[in-house]
Length: 618
Image (cartoon, rainbow, N blue to C red; front, side, top):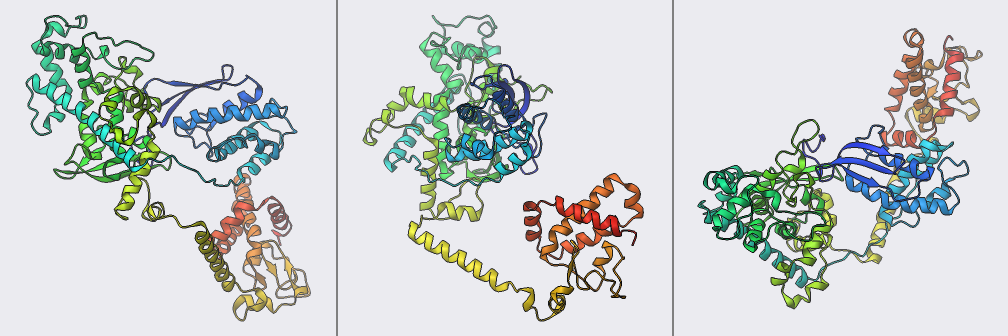
């Protein structure tokens, strides 16, 4: 989906279409950029009215949903999927309080806030905003409850992240490098055996169609769709030809216990041609650690065949999309090694060419090519329609179950069975290494200012608190020093207003009248010039206390413009807006916006309306 700051590129799990919502089965079906087939999310909870109501709120929170609004910010399939977990908890808490619907008039803010108390801190805000939506759409007093919920403030809780020891991180990287190198070498040697030139790296850019064309031209009898796997007496080249033209016989099949091919040599050929989760997991580890890039898992999965822009023989710019903050940026990388991020993308583009050729015909409903067709971290599947980026379980399955990592593991780092694979911890390793290089080390998605904070050494709490308090006091003292009460003004309009006796002042909502509401030229008569004249009258003054009235005047004139064209054209409403907006520009914009955000303007609008209606013909 296009975005002003990231062009045509999509986030890893960006939701592309909300296919349907089934409130009876409590399911939401959607398509996203990380998979070809639509996925169905099921809310595993009792089918109560509350469950159906919150299911619709989840669907309406999706940015591309049919009923979206300005609060519909969910773009990632992971956000939607994770919401199902905390929604089940909140529904359970709601039932514990004795409610089965969000339409119950007795539901109040403390009860609603208690629904997300059991959640961890990083999920509470999302849960709170989802509750705000569901009560706004269903509760009799939903608008007020939603406003109160969205004004909730959350504490940031300290976390204790999992980290690797240096020796363990080095052992993980070394094992991944060995596995990755073996798979790289296997495909290179396969192409060498069938006559292709593999000197340098040009062999990585040989199109899959050319290699498959060689197979069809040389061994047409093995390339028929109904050809059996060549086993007895077949040459290595004949086996390669059959493997190239029968990609559906290889790859991942969910719940399958046995491979679809029988010969050991054929299985090795398949692993060389069609990278599995083991090869991709090794590449992911190296991609995260290479050049201390520190990419997170989701950013890595977005990489595709167009992620590199060459800027020389050994240098390139690497595209990266971070869906959470809608950023697309580039990072300089070297191509001189197959272990740098740029080298890994170049290598994977070649190693996955046959897998991507297998899913080349996958298209969106509008006929365009699917995003998943060109992505690199997509495990080869027997059925191309089942293609999707590696989910969180497949790398762990590869790490736990593959003997290839065992073969290359350094036992001095401890038993590999005791070492989990955590990409968050790998990012911390990359960050620590970048810290050792100084601030030239980069962190993806961070500005220069943020990078300084992330790569700085942590201060002791007592010193941090001391400095933070001193800084806050300094800000406060400086702000107070700049502030002058009206009574202390020595010149200008403020001094003129300060000189007027308080009993002579009269508040008129959009300003204060220093003649107590009397005519400026005939003080013994009441003023009948109208509210607009207050802006040009020498007796009219406006202070920060009148910002709500000025904002209300602007809103009132908008109401007139929408509903009474005659009054807008012939009356004084347009003049009132001109003067009110001009007066607001004289105040600091942050002050005006803060008052606009925190003040209920309705009573002020009613007062301005009364003044305008009574005095507009003055």
